[in-house]
Length: 514
Image 1 (tube, rainbow, N blue to C red):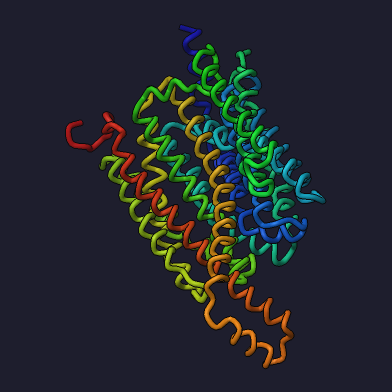
Image 2 (tube, rainbow, N blue to C red):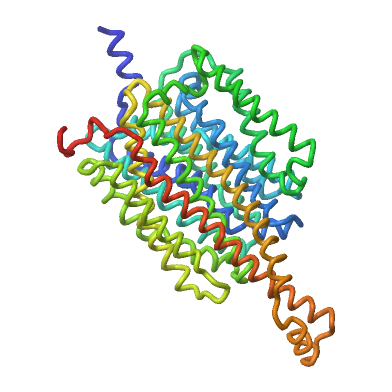
C-alpha cells in the first residue's frame, strides 16, 4: 500500500496554491511561448539574414529547417530525460541552454555557424514544450487542470502570431541578430525562477535504459534527408555524388531505424503505436497538412519581401492576421470536439483551408495588402479545426499507457514534416520561377519596342535590358508563387478525404451511439 501511494505521489499531482501557483504557471507558459515563437520569428527574418550573411534566400531558410529538425529529434528523448534527471531539472537546464544558444546565434558571423547554433538551440528547446505540459499538470490542482491547459494552448496559438510581427519589427529597427538576443534575458530569468519555485516539486528519478542505437539511426536518416533537401538544388541534385550518397544513407538509415525500433525492448520512438489505425491515419494527416500549411507560412513572407518589396515589419503585419480568428476559434473548437465527430471538423477545416489556398492562386503582382490579409484571416479561422481535431482523433485511438509515446511521435512527425516541406517548397519555388522566366522570355510581344521606349526616356541599352528582365523576373516569381499555392491546395483537398480512412472514435462524448 505504501509503495502504491509513493508511486502515485511521484506520478500524480503536487499542486501549488496562491500567487506562487500563478507565477509558476505564467513562467511555464511564457517558456513554451518563447520556444514556439522561435519557429516563426525567423520566417520574416530570412531575407535580412540572407542579405547580412551574403547567401541566397533559399539558403537562408536553413535557419528555419535546422532548428525544426533538431527540435524534432530530441522530442522522443524527453520522457527518458525527465525520468533519468527529473522534469524540473531538465526543464531549467534546457531553458538556460536555449538562452546561451540564442546568444550564440546572434553572434554568428557566417551561415554555417548560425546553422550550427540553431541546431543547438533546437536541441535545447525540444524538451521544453512537452515538459511545460507535464509540469503544469503537476503544479495545478485537479479542479484547475483545464484552465492550466487552456493557458498552455493559448501560448501555442498566439506565439506564431507574434513571431512575424516581432521578427519584422526587430529586423527593421535593430537588425536580425536581435531576433535571437531577445530570448536571452527571458531564458535566464525563467530558468532561475522555475528552479527556485519548483525544485521541491521535482519528479522522481530512476535509471532507465536509452536506445542509443535507435537515436543514432534517427539522427543519421533525418539529418541526411534534410541536408539532401537543403543542398540538392545548389549541387544539381543527383548529378552530384554527394547528394546520391546522402540519399543512400537516408534510405538505408530509415530502413535500419524501422527494423531496430520495431524489435528493441526500449525504443527511442515506439513505432508500435502505428498499429492503431486511427493514430496512423491521424499522424499521416497531421504530417501532410502541417507540412503544406508551414510551407505557405514560410513562402508568403519571402514572396512579400522579394517580389513585392515589403519590409520585414510590413510582411509580419500582413501575415500575423491569420492569428486573429485562430485565437477566437481555438476554445470553441475544443468544446465542439466532444460533441461532433472530429473527422467532420477536420474535413471542414481542411476544405476551408483548401479554398483559401485556391483563392491565393489568383494573386498578382499588383495585389494590395487588404486582399492579402483577407485570406490570412480566413486561414486563421480554419487552423484550430484541423489542428485540434486531428490531435484528438489520433490520441483518442491510443491506450493510456501508450499516450506518452504517441504524443511524442506525432509531434516528431509534425516538426519533421515542417522542416522537409520548407526545403521542398523553397526549392520548388525557385525552380518554377526559373522555368516561368524562360517561358516568358521566349514569348514576349513587343520587347524591342519596350526597350526602345526605355532608351528614349534616357536609359542605356544595358539599363533597358535590365529593367525588362526585372519585369519578366517579377512575373515569373508571381507565377511560381501561385503554382506552389496550387500544390498546397491540392494537398489540403486530398487529406480532407484521407482522414475518413480513420475509424470513428469510440469514446467521443456526445456522439450518437456512444
